[in-house]
Length: 343
Image (tube, rainbow, N blue to C red; front, side):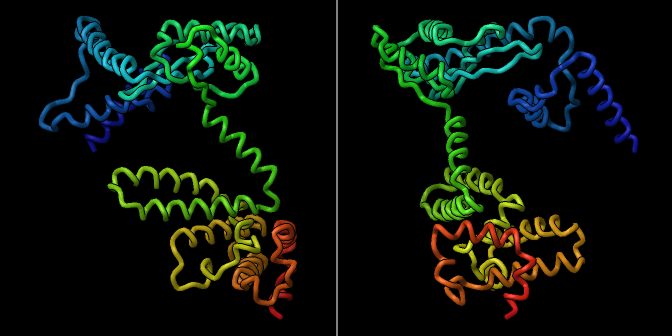
């Protein structure tokens, strides 16, 4: 009990210090603080842990660390000169709300924040302004060490990249201009959303993602190389398991299968789909898990999934053009299917 009280006392003092000094809370989620935490964890328990004293912090401590950081940065810059670098441009706001533009440089041995430019928020970023800003960054890097430049696809940015394509100096003219992958994915998902009628597209993407995970697990490479890729794809796939999406997936006429409800070899992913679908049905039927309406709709979903489309359904039900429309109709009128399924 004594130890817990002292720990709580330290926690209170720490949080009060953070609050009084106005430290940004996100600072404790960054990579730098994680390194501090890990270094503290490596201190042997036999040694009493102490924060650096004021004399160390305010004396020679910071200048000595500046030398170490400069050494690390110089190693990254050497890699830039040998292998070239990618410059990434990203706009954001400062803590005071002023618009900033960060320029990051990444290479084979790491990345660093190369420059931060404060821009006038009252003036729109025209092509000329963006052109002068990027040109100054590239020339100061210098241009011969830049292999490509990554930014989003705003109209003034794309116009600026076309302008650089005719730049007289070959070191700048040869730079490859890359669109930001996040921006490209957002555009792609927006297009998919316009195509997604009745959840058909989401259902296909979910199944393809599951197949990708299975293929990656079968690749003959070291586990430490393939596992991060598998984990990332699996995490992204989980984002599609929202209850409404899952219900639409199970109602997709081309996805009806015994594997979800009636197979003896149902895998964990299929069971997760069923659980999320039941959550959606529960929310739509009043939230009573023992209520008659919920149990009826849940049983109808299981009966509907057990019916393979080739058995007892008219041919128009299998057509690609009709599938989404039928799926949407079933989704809206699911409680009406009980009597028909029982026949």
